[in-house]
Length: 235
Image 1 (tube, rainbow, N blue to C red):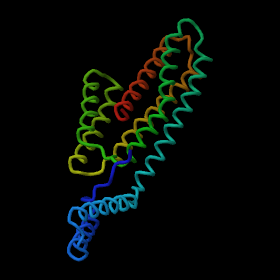
Image 2 (cartoon, helix red, strand yellow):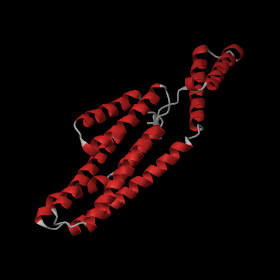
Image 3 (spheres, rainbow, N blue to C red):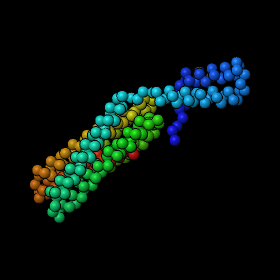
């Protein structure tokens, strides 16, 4: 159900309601209780009209459109990698790697739906992210950072820096939606880079070489880490 607009957010609407109340009671001699109900109803309707006329944030709309394109591109890239991994990783010693790569590809293909869900929320009526929400994301990222190492830990350091900046904005009452979308976009861009490395390695590397297989496994784990970071931002 659509939430009613709060007239207190629109001072002119409140003044209009008060004027109607005074006119109705003092000039038209309408009973106070009845006139109060009428004035409140008019104020709520006026606030709803003003709210519907409120312009959307054009920068936010641009970032959301870009994010949707990025997530769709990543999903398509993941689908291609999934097919190529099944084509090139065929020996019994490569099955574990194949399963890992196909898992991260499946997760990447879920991204457009996740992106659609989070951007719909961010454009909704109650869309501003609270400090408590960002603090939760920060706690999850920090806890994960303490258990990580290497590239995964570096990824999380960047995410934690972004979340700390967004938390400060939220505490100052600023709109953090664009910053949150930007943080999510960065994670997707980095994930796309890792996915491309995986794709290149599968096609060009000697897949009978243990070192190459280990490198592919490390890239797969790195991509999985990016996906977990995306989950922190979208859940």
